[in-house]
Structure formats: structure tokens, C-alpha cells
Length: 562
RNA sequence: UGGGGCGUCGUCAAGCGGUAAGACACAGGCCUUUGACGCCUGCAUUCGUAGGUUCGAAUCCUACCGCCCCAGCCA
Image (cartoon, rainbow, N blue to C red; front, side, top):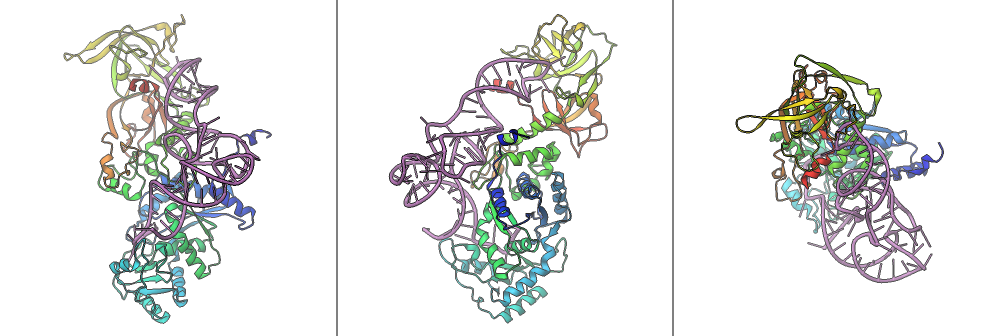
């Protein structure tokens, strides 16, 4: 409690700094944030960054974070997404308590505010078609022109807006617009649309409404209604902040949340937009939103990522305003660290090569006791059967080994993890010269894996008893795209960079029998291979299908590639 | 050519006028019954560029260069 606390002061990011200042200056006495997803798709790792930020910042300051669905566009939104999003946020470890909200809950209030705006002469009904409106809007360098409907009287606007609400006009025929400034350099201020006519059944309000408020109008007011103190969003909304402020200032809402923008997360070898992820799902490049190759929260969960590892990742990458692309290796490092500490070890042979131990009695079997974790005795031990026939990994034998290869080869001795020292005596091949089987002999005095004479054996192999093995399917995953930034060239479809080998299904894997009872909440390290977990969808009782979460660091592989 | 934002190691990212944190990656070494883990060492005389202010600048000023976002009745 003395010096340690001062040795590594973690510096605050710019948002936490602003919030700390607002608290110390007395501008705010509490912190209220919100995570505002639109229920039109699944959450991905980029959303996790926002979730960790909003919930994190609130809890660090004893404040509150609301989960609010931004459901103002019924043509794209579905109840199923609402449920999936709630599941994902909760799984990540965050609790919104009673603070579950929907923008659609505010439709009535929002409508009243719009009426108020009209009465103030700050909003008008515009009959321009979408094409005409685009023309009137001007361009990036030329100012827009006032709509011919801009100067309708408040009375006329009120009547028209009521008629819009009553369903007297066709979809798209009229909109309600804010009256701001058609010559603003900021295009968002050129009389933005506040309400459009849209006949679509809303997942919560059904067919009650045929007019729906736009994001810019809804979001700031929802924040104000909920007394949000800090409204955190991504950079592309910075241009919208003047409109956010205009609506709240014009309506003189009792509170005026502060919008602060930060850079969204990008990762190497993947895409992050919901639109693109949806495309991968719809065009069946992946099996669904929760395909383990997808960087969605549900995909990561199915892949074997833990909530803690994702939280650690979000902490690690920091928060700033510059655009960046984080190396996928950082994410992998986070899950490896977590699972290295917490995943029990097991043995599994993915590509089996049969080994016959010729001097081991044919009818003999024994049970070896193996620690579940090399450094954490609290994780206990398990029993693994051993017999005359075992499987080892095909990669662990080479007839003509290169320098530094310290696995099995003719005449070489290796250790079978926690079992015995064995020497390769004979290579059995089929008529085509393919290696079929190895004949080895074991040293009975080396039970447990070390010889009484103290001789050094460099190589240690994992193995599975052939007689007892659980045959199972294991799915190996590689990055979904084969270049760091699949979106680098706007003229090239990002899907052309899809990695054709991102999924490899191995159906003849041999696992230690203990694994038969594994469930999808389990995580294992298959020794010398990586981390794996049972697939939550395709595993059957007693017959799990395993997903590959992440490999172990492999320095031998690095050596080989040089 | 309008408006907004951003440029610090290969990738993220601290730094806020007093002489470049940390993480990942990478390279070497130690340890090892997982070529894992762990441990040790190295890795920006320099902060987009050029000037200026100052005893002192990544931090202040000026100019320039580069990148991203905005012309949905999407969010």
C-alpha cells in the first residue's frame, strides 16, 4: 500500500480526462452514458470497444450506462437482433440493470417536440422529391438553395404534419425538415430531414406510426430525455454535432448532453462494418453471424474467446481520435494470455500417425495421472489411458529430419508426454511408399517421462491411446481475409480478398477420452497445438465437435519459414 | 475549390514547454516432461515537412504536405 501504486500510473484517455474534469469542475455530479445499438445486425468487436468504454467509464465513476436501442428505421430492424444484442452485452459482462430503453418509446414525445419546432417556425413540411432535394442541397463546394416550401406558415405546417402522421400521404411524398441554413458549409445543417413517411411494421410499435424520426433528431433528444451526461460516438458523427446541439438548444431541453467522438476500431485481416458482415452472411461465405471466423461477439464466443479476453483487448488498444488498424496479433495475445492461465490441458492428435510399441505387452493397459496445468496445481489432475498402440501427430515424425528437428525420426528417442521414452525402430510403409505406421520400443523404466539414468531427451510429443481414443471432428480456422486491409482499394470488391483456406475441417482427430464430456463453456489447451472449445451448435452429447480458438506461439514454425 | 477531423517505433499508444511510457510484433539469450508459459536483453538522438519563438519545443506560432469523413427521406 506504499510505493507500488505510484509506479505505473495508467494515463487516462482523452474522454476519461474530459469526464474527470467535468466532475471536478462541478459541471456534473454523476456520469450517465449509453450504448445505443441499432437492432439491424449483430454486434462485433468494434461495438465491444464502445460497450467497454461506455459501461467502463460509467462504473469507474459510480455512474450508470443505459442500453438503448436506436430503433427508428423499421425497414431494417428486427426483434431477433434486439435479443442477440442483449445476450452479447450481458455475455461481455456488463449490466444495464433497469436501464433498458428504446428510442421508439419516445416516439410520442419526439412528435410533440416536432410540433413545438414547427410552432417556433424552426421546422417545415417539404414536398420536394428525394431527387429534387438532392439538387436543392447543393454540393460540397456550392451552397444549397432554399426549398420552395420553406416559408409555409406554422399553421399550414402543423396541419400538414398532422396529416403526415394520419397517413394521408404516400411514403416518401413529404418530409418534415429543420429550418437551419441551406448555405452552411456543413451539409448536415442544410435543412436536414427530421421525419419521413414510411409504412413499415415496427418491431415494437407495430403499425401505430407511419412517420418515423431520423437519427439526428432522435438521438440527441433520447440522450436528453435520459439525462445522459456524455454521449460517446465514433468520428463520422463529428459533423453531426452542430445539429445535435442545434436541436437541443432550439428546444431548450432541460439537459444538454455532450457528444464526444472517438475513432472506431479496425483490425487487420478482417472487415468491421455491419453491412459487409451481413453480406458475408447473406452470400454464404460464412455459416452465419456466429460463424467462428467472424469477428462478431457471437462468433468470437463460439470460437472460444472469453469475455475477459475481449475486455482486456479493449483496454489494451487504447482510445484516440486518429484512424488506425490494430494488429490481429494483439487480440490473439489477449486470448492466449487468458487461456494460458485458465484452460486445463488435454491431449489431442489432429492428424494421427499410428505407433506400435513393440515391446509393450499387448494386453496391458495403464492409467497415467497427468496434471491439468503445469503451473497451477489447484487445477488438479486427470487420468489418461496408455496402451501398446498410440497415435502421434504426423508432423512429429520425419524420416529425414532437418537440423534442430527434435521430434521423432528413425533411431531417435523422444518422450511421450507424461508417459515413457520411446525410440523409433522401424517405419512401415504401404505399397506406394507412404508411411503407414511406426514401430517403436519403450523404456519401461522411464514411466512418467524421465529415465532413471538421467539421460536428456529433448523432444516431447503429445499422444493418444489408440484403443481408448475419442474420434472427433476438429475445425481449424485461419484469418478470413488474406490481406491486412481488405478494404484498401475501393474499386476492388473486398470479397476478392477472402482467404479460401479460412476453414479446415478434420474429421479423424483422436482425442483423449476425458474430452467426451466437455461442454461448450469449456476451454482446453490441446498441448503443443493451441486452445480449443466444443462447438456450441454442432456438438452432440458424448460426441463433441471442437473449434480451434487460437494456436500456441510456434517458434519452430517460424524457424521452418526462414 | 466548402465544412469537420487526424498525422509520435512495423502496428496500436502515452506525452500537454524541461530533454520520447507501455503493449503487440520483431531479434538474441536463459529456462523447459508443451519448440508453450516464464525470465533477461535489444528495438524512435527523434515526434509529417520547413521555418520561427525560447536557455530549452513532440508539446507554442506560421506556412506547407499527407490521410480520413460529409452531398440517405440509413444509423
